[in-house]
Amino acid sequence: MRTKHFLLLFMLTGILLLLVLIKIYSIKTPESELMRAGTLLSQARYEKCSEYATIAFEKSENYYDSAMIEWKYQNAKFFLLRKYDKVFELSFKSIETSNIAIENSKNIKADFEQYLRKRLAQIHFKINEFEKKFGNFPLLQDHREELVKCKLLTFESDLTYKNNNYQLCNQQLDSVDLALDKILDYYTIKLNIYFHDYPQWQRLTEQTISHSRRNNSYAIVIDKIARELLIYKNGNEINSYTIELGLNWIGDKKHQGDKTTPEGLYKVLQKKQKGETKYYKAFLIDYPNAEDKVRFFLNKQNGTIKSDAKIGNLIEIHGNGGKGIDWTDGCIALKDADMDKIFNICPVGTRVVIVGSVNALNKLSIYSK
Image (cartoon, rainbow, N blue to C red; front, side, top):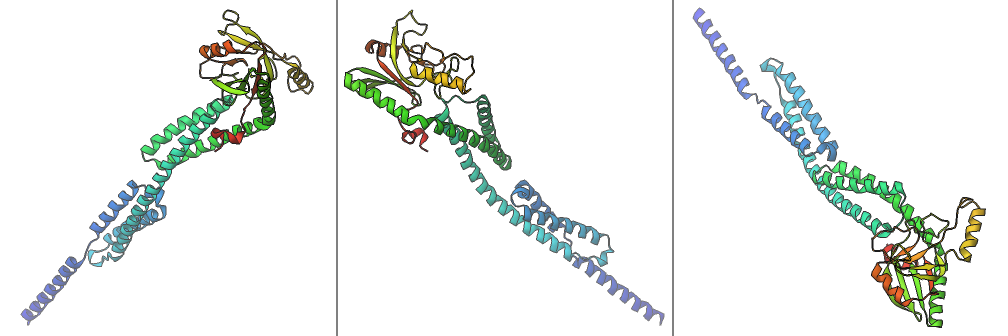
């Protein structure tokens, strides 16, 4: 009887042991899934999904962290009681959302890269356009410094773009754009205000050319914006020369020392040969004329200029030019060879008109955009 009981107990123990072994071998552990989820999450970080696919990336992180917590919780149990279903579910969700985040991030980055490439090109174009339009303008010192900063920051933006740091690149370009627009707006407004005098410039130019035609004489027209000295004979333009102006050329001359080239109708008072001027050869013009003196007196009365200011004189068309920048105290400078040409043909008494522009603002291709 005891033998039968022992045999039965042995069989039951064997069956129980077999069930345990079946349970052990039937339990599927989630290590490989967790490893795959972790690897994809690392790839998502490398692809900067936290920046470009934030929602999907955060979901993936949350799923992975929850899977790890659940895995540790189940491992703390007696092995026969462990259930990894939730770990598998969370791991698969992490894998799925990581793949979505990586794909979205790649697409967004590709679009962002293209956007920044175009934006960088636009910034370079804007800087070049500003220098083409206003490179000869007497810029305020603050604006000169700001423009230098914009150029340096644009150079840095090129580097951050090449290093795939697109967010920083975009922030840098925002700063450049804001500063450039502020400076551009300032000088665009200043230019438009300057051209309020265009009807007067046009009238003086037409009078001078008509006088040349009626009297079969030479005339000199100075176009400040175009940086040109135009020679007319018998009312017809026969030549043009590049000039350089006063350092603070824009606007009409107000007083001595303002480094502004005057505007108005003048005439050649004296032709100075070599040795009579420190600027090779020169035409001395009759600044200040009667209109200049009246304007100077009124400006003193209304407080536009200081009461002790002087009107100035000795404005010349002279040589020693060709420096490529505005540098005179208010005179008009030409290359010596060009000065020789006009010196030989224009007599004392030749009419000289100095204007901001001989063309309307909307006719100047450089400013028409």
